[in-house]
Structure formats: structure tokens, C-alpha cells
Length: 425
Image (cartoon, rainbow, N blue to C red; front, side, top):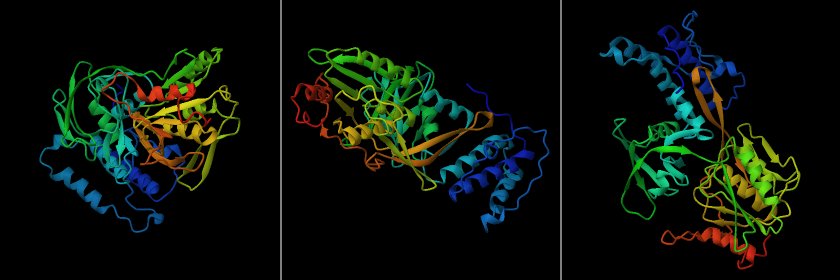
């Protein structure tokens, strides 16, 4: 665990909080703060701070008198002074300011929460094996991880997490208004302990209570094998777009290129919740020509940037099919959209999750963090997947009552000529 930031003294609290409030107002008014020093909390209590409560002219008639009145009232009149933790109050005020933006993916992170988010794309942790996000304002399961407690218990992509109970942590709460880092930190915990999730599932008229025992979760990036009757179809599962994905992908491509009788490639991004945008650009580039557009970014300044391939793809001569489902989100949707828009690669499975925004993590002093939505991304054709997702070219549902993987089999049939998609690519 990272250590918490040093205790803040009241002599610094007001100046620190005032600075953060102004930063937040700048963001909400559309200003771009470029100087990283504006994002740093000074926790050196030895410095003398002169408190200036005046508001710069560019902020008009904004008045912080009510805020200071409430702060002073608590400081002087609240009966249990042991509950007045200056650091927690500052963090709570900043969290409230950031959450007022109304974007569940824009969050201020305490040191503990920031550590948890950094574990997601690299490392090993104790958890139940679910990737989570938001459907509107509802906390939702993006995807259960393979061979995880969540997958074994039948947790499904799209399940709404309505409540969380953990008797070991003395937690029993609903999830309305919860932030993503708060949810992750609550669900993770010591290996061997149990947590109960209350799930709301489409088509089921009552909440589903699922008891999950935490285990060590070690998430790989890429798993490569060969499928088909002659095992001459490369089957590459991409489980996340993390820090190790590119190296593991390169190994899978090398295996694929060594197959002399290769019929084609199936890239499986089902239950892949995404990750780094650049990872999606790198992987898609292996199937595209130099200069092809992979993704379009529109930022807060109404500027449009195109991410294009920077090298000639190694698999451009091979037919490719992409497998998706409701757990395919963000970078997975970027990858799938790029291949379909550029080379008509068939997309098979079920409608994707629909996350079309881009977040930038900023690391602050003392282990703090700020994750902020800085733009949205579009497929090369200009389609925004947010809240709607990508619709597959052929929709196939896996039957939970059978041991077969109907979606994978449909992709295999494409290469054998038994699919109505056989003439697309």
C-alpha cells in the first residue's frame, strides 16, 4: 500500500482547498490547465501561507462565503472534534467538486484509490475478477475475467451492481453515486474473504445475490492458439490493452506467421474492457496499411486528431474476423471498429458495451490522482459508440446450456466457407 499523504494542518487547508476549487471551476468553464504545478498539493506545513479569499475577475460574481461559513461552523461548533479530519474534509470537498461535473469517469483519487486504479493495467491483486464501468449512472459489470470467481459464479456482462455487502469490512451499501475507484476499492480485498453483490439483470424480475470469495487475480493480456479441423486458423484472445499487451501480441503474431498453411486469424476481444488507446492502435495496425486511420479523437477544444498506422502491418494478407460481446469496451471497440471500417473485417457476436470517451490520468503529489475525461473517440467512419456500442455484422448468442462456443464456431465457419459472411473480406 502507498502511504497516505502527510497530515494537512489547518493553516494550509483553506489555501489548498481554495486552489483546487478554482482549478475545478477552470475545468468546468472550459479552461485547459497546462501548468502541472497547479495540480500539486503542497503538504509542507513549514511554509507560511497567506490566505487570500478574493476571487479573480475572470470568475465573475462567484462567492465562496458560504463554503467558508460552513467550514468555520464545523470547526467551532461540531461537538465531536475527533471527527474533524482536515485531510478527509479537503479530499471530500474536492471529490464533491469533481463529481458535480456529472461524469462518472472523471474522479479525484485518494492515495489508496489511486493505487487500485494503477493495479488494473498491470500487476496482481486480490479480487473477484470483474471489470466494472457505468451504464448511464448505474454501476455495471463490463466483463468477468476468465476462470475468476465472478465467472464461475455466473456473473454476466451488463449486470447492474445495485448493492455491495462485505461483513469483514463492515460495509453494506447501495451503489447510487459511487465512483469507480470507490467501487473497485470496496470490491477488492484480502484473498479468501467473501463479498456479496446484489445484481440486476435484464430479463430477471428480482435482484440476484451472488456470494464471491476473493482470490488472487492475475490477468494475462494475450492468449494464442490454433483452431479448426486442421488447426490452421490462428485464434488470438486479447483480454486487455495493458502495459504488457504489445509484447505478448508480438509473440502471438510470430506464432501466426510461422504457420505455413494459415487460413486466417480470429481476434477475440470478448469481455475485454479496454485499456490504453495506443494499444488498440498498435494491434489494429498489424492488419492495416501504412497511414490508415485507426481512431479519431475529438478533444475539449473542438480539435480533431487522427491516429493512423505508423508501420506496415504484418498480417495484412490474412483474412481476419473479430469476436465481440457486451463486455467488449473502449479500446476493444476502437480495435473492432478500425478493422471493420478499413478492411471490412466481419464482426461476430453481440452488441458491444459502448464506451466512447477518453480519460487522462494525472498523478499528483502525495500519491493522489485525477482522472479526467478529455475527449471522445470515433471509429474511422465517424461513428461514436458511446451508450450504443458496435452492432456485429452477424449476431450470435452463446447458449449457456451447451458446452460449445457458438460465437467462436461461427468465426471458424467463416474460414471454411460455411458462413454467409464468407464473401465479405
